[in-house]
Length: 187
Image 1 (tube, rainbow, N blue to C red):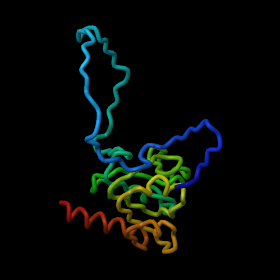
Image 2 (image 1 turned 120 degrees about the horizontal axis):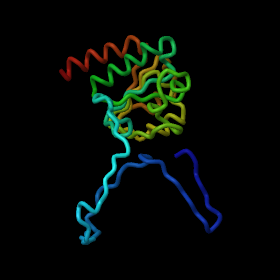
Image 3 (image 1 turned 180 degrees about the horizontal axis):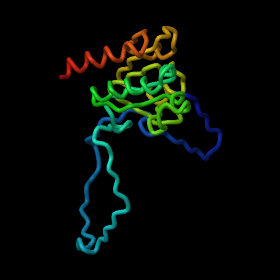
Image 4 (image 1 turned 30 degrees about the horizontal axis):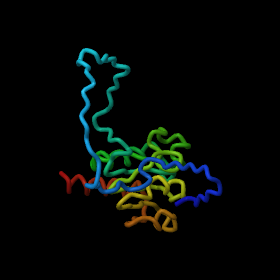
């Protein structure tokens, strides 16, 4: 939780970002489905295509992905190679590619990949944080992940406090080894 909100007036408003909380189990207790005949024929309903988009088949939706591999400022020494390695691992795992705000602000990757308070909120089964320090704003967007793996050469990086598993090492050495290991394991 980032902040406690206390209401002192009768007017109360709250907003919640999508994916901020886990889904509740379906309840068997309620609801009745009622079918209504609107008296409309299929020809009475006009159709108009407003827009058609073709997306790359290999791109996995960041908010719906069960696995997310995110890169951060740790790729700064060679951002192009760093995010190529992040993307390669993501492809092997059929994962989405995410990024920290620092990486987006530095121009390493487009905003649509940003995870965090000012980006997307994700709740994957597996979140791999590569070269991400673990700022509270980033944690707000991925803290609900079931399993978090952190890869960072700074053993004191705050991300390790949130991670289930941590690898202290240079991402330019760790990611190629992980990618090969997953390729061999997954076929």
